[in-house]
Length: 117
Image (cartoon, rainbow, N blue to C red; front, side, top):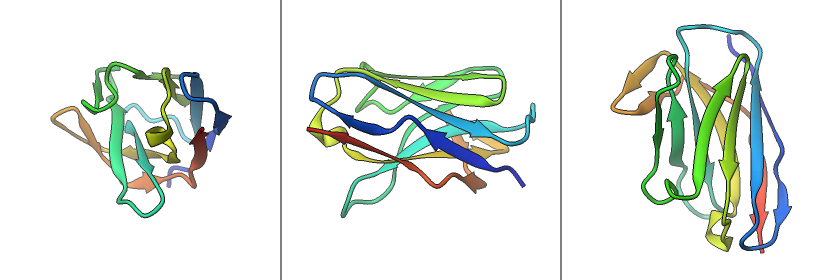
């Protein structure tokens, strides 16, 4: 069972930047990783993903502003030019199946809140 712990969320002004992190408890070369987000009253949506070879996929809605990376046992999401619409709970996920630049999640973290005002 993979445990995922997000950190780095917080409040930021519009136009600002933030990097959130996810530490996972077990290093596995077979896991892909992903970020999802869920705004209040909305469905959870995929944001970005990275496979075991560090190939990445990023949602069209944020691809010019967000970047995903992984190093060792950590996953990162670098967010720039943040807007109020980016306000959401951001979740880290891990999975064993990579499909079309998406990681199919099997495990979820508890989330970290990002608020943009």
